[in-house]
Image 1 (cartoon, rainbow, N blue to C red):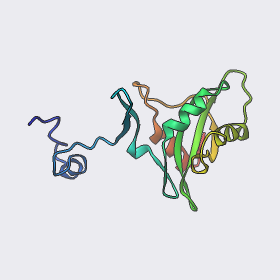
Image 2: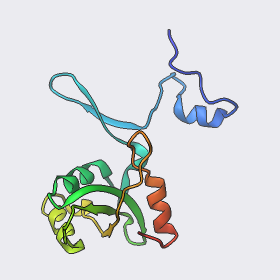
Image 3: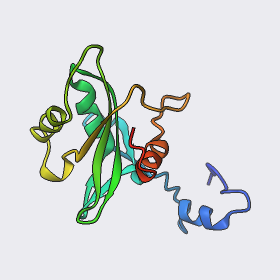
Length: 151
């Protein structure tokens, strides 16, 4: 038997949440294996938005947003909602000279997804905060929402 990793230093609770009793490592990644037996990691479990018991993957909505010719970058995060628990909201960087509106973006997404994946709000920004690796800093975007500083 070989070990990938022994656990968190001086943090047995975090280790127990990550490595189960059968010694399986739970990374929190969401992925699938295609017909060619290739593995694709598409999102993180902790990033899922929980809308009335339904799960919404931010990466799916981000891919749709970025495919729009008037959008150069986007990030989707959860926003607390009394009725639904959480709703998806988007931070969007428009293309140069684009005047695309919040309503146009919401309609564009609504035509492609089931009701629980619809974007609730759109906030226009100049830049999506990212780590040097290119990973979206969702925690920073969620903090803007909780502080009432959406943009």
